[in-house]
Image 1 (cartoon, helix red, strand yellow):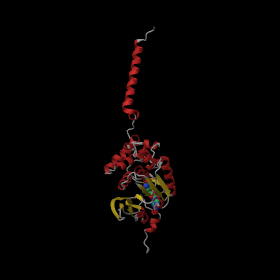
Image 2 (cartoon, helix red, strand yellow):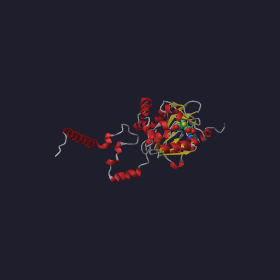
Image 3 (cartoon, protein in one colour):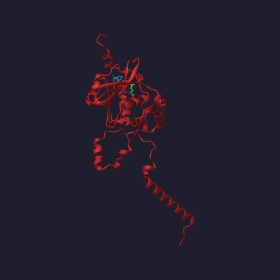
Image 4 (cartoon, helix red, strand yellow):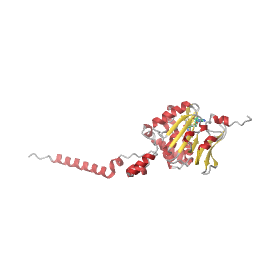
Length: 296
Ligand code: SAM
């Protein structure tokens, strides 16, 4: 009988031992943990692991769950380091602390919301032009305004001034649903298709004058106006839920503006608080007429 060469036997042993070692590693750590990504997106909560839920709990949560942002578009896995740096240097450093807001700012691919010529500047600490004389706001201001709304996964948000839809996407990472209105039709159309392409199934966008709000979807837990208004539009105060919060830049388009937080308590009493001097593009449409007193 031919006997196996000792070197060949040794090789077979080595192969068998290596195979067993890999098998043991996969059993101990699980395939998911061996290839776990180092970065997790907003709204992917480990605590909400469906593997730990009972069948009944799973059914109930599927019924109650709003559609969540998908994060499957390639932009989400691009420029992650730039977003982390933006959050660390421009946002956390200026004392925005809400963990959901920080996670949302790390998640939303701002470079997918700016013009091709501005890709290099997408994560810089300033606003950028988006066409039609409008801008995408400075990242810090987006984070600051979002934090002031105290959003949670059950919140329904109204935004006036969709622009690029970046602010709407940031809110959509935290809130249940976001309704956003843009007065410039071309911007509304491009924002809508951008949101669709990026998988923001919980953002609803339309063209129109945001002064009147979105009556069919009232009331809102939070309202954010991202253009400077000379006054707080009364229809929006009405559309705010008791216990709700609204933030807007209040002031003249050419002079001083202040970010103002409006709160409505459970009895419907309105309070306002000035937060920060800012500079926004003006709100247009009905608000400009509403601002004129009768004798003018
Ligand atoms: N939130 C935007 C973003 O994330 O890109 C930035 C908004 S930009 C500073 C202000 C936007 O408000 C502009 O796109 C402008 O056309 C829009 N706007 C101005 N007046 C409006 C109104 N009455 N109703 C709806 N949108 C309005």
